[in-house]
Image 1 (spheres, helix red, strand yellow):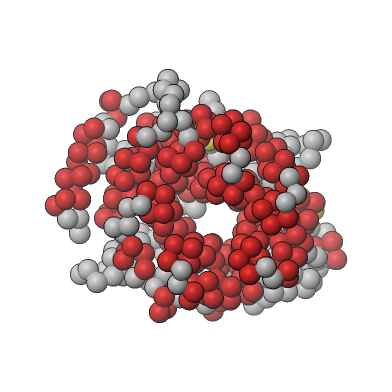
Image 2 (tube, rainbow, N blue to C red):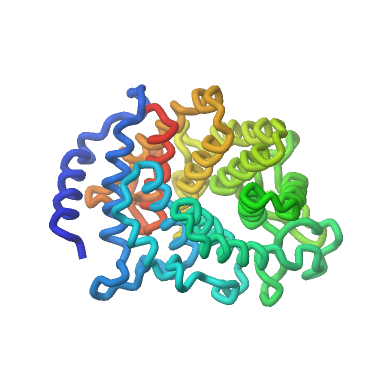
Length: 393
């Protein structure tokens, strides 16, 4: 239930940001100071409208509108990111008593129905909370999930050959599904493994990350002779784990930026940064409409599903993380205007009159208003936070 102060704040936000008063995202330049106010307002809507806080009547410590763990943990990570960037910790208890993030009941491999990617998204949440609170229980739980996700990498499945060695399987050995090695699972594994190395200096974590990176680059990165060079396809096909040339989702590109930034920090090898910038430039060239991020399903005649509405925000979040890790003022300056553009475009085009956020950032249409999804709103928050930290708008 919304408090009186929350309702008042949302009403003021909607009055001040009515659809009729939208400002073109391409006409303003300067420090993106407005983004902090936008973030405050959107997170208030997310946590008061979508989240049922533990301890409140009917509270589950979850987002009741979604049953998917990865939607929940990525949204919660976005809230932690918001609190760390802004210093506004009013949602601390919401997060730390959440069903999937309470220190006394943290998730274990058996909770994931063989889904390695969902477990790895959870690892990133737990590592983020560990960074935020220094409560070692989150770190330990994340390490356990990371170890499980990496099991059986060289096992043969569904007729796979040795060409598939090195990559992480999308699902655990107990799955009944056909074996699949995809981009997002390997990218998340690289991020989590490199983070583990940076904290512990245990070389085995870095070795795991480097092995998965070699596999990812060789098997899923698009070369100069095919469409969208520099981007990463969704996954591979058996038996030899060749590039399946399927969709180049934006979140795949964002998580690989973060992974490469961490590998640079771990090794000092600047080639990882150069590799990341090739992908970032390819995103701006191939994954935008009028320079605003757009999935293929965002374009006219298509509709994004309940997962896909959140992908663009995850790209922006992991771009933010990449810039934090690399800490290069020249790189930040090169992309700051574009980062600010994403926040202004999202705030102008995807915002509904009731404060909810749709999936289309480049323009307004009926499709952009649906579905109502916490990950669509969280995606908008990610765009704003990246702009608050690194954008001009």
